[in-house]
Length: 240
Image 1 (cartoon, rainbow, N blue to C red):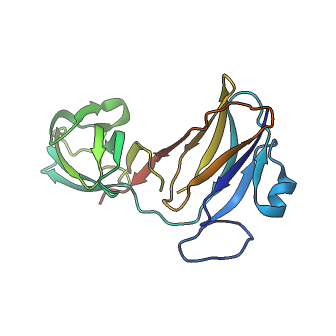
Image 2 (tube, helix red, strand yellow):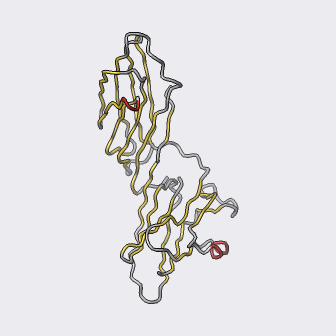
Image 3 (spheres, rainbow, N blue to C red):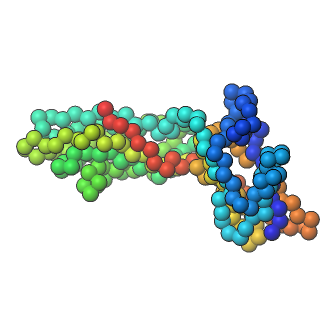
């Protein structure tokens, strides 16, 4: 296998390297795969390595930067005489219009005794998931700078139903291709002797891969390829 050298943009600071400009990105708790030449990294911050076969995680790190939710959820819940409950939900994308969130899934909890659901939404599809005591709003494509509305009505038993214990949180899942906002995993995969560089869980617009160099004197042919994907994993919001 050839030697590879990975370069990040100049705004990146590694822990202990000192503070730079306010727009710098400082990485903490950096962990490298065992194939990385740590002595080289300690000397000049070059990420140099000879990759093993197959896919592997090259590096991971932690950021302390506070990032606003890319999809913000506002809720209004009203009970009516303990016989029914009404939800008004607004989902708003807080990223630029040129990006689009895919496979958005918003999980809104309801009382465990709720039944007879009725939904009305401006986009996507909604299903009741009684096994989760929740309803799920799915939006296949959610462009930046947009907001959408959903209303939901549920009947409750004639007797006084249980309150929503501690107001369970709303859960949000999604991914945004070709977008960076905070935290990163770097994975390298060799397929048919062509190196592919995959960056996932990217979060912070200031962090980018500047180059991937292949050091090989024998004319080794390769096709470097970089893909940025923002995946929120899952985050939660409390209902008021």
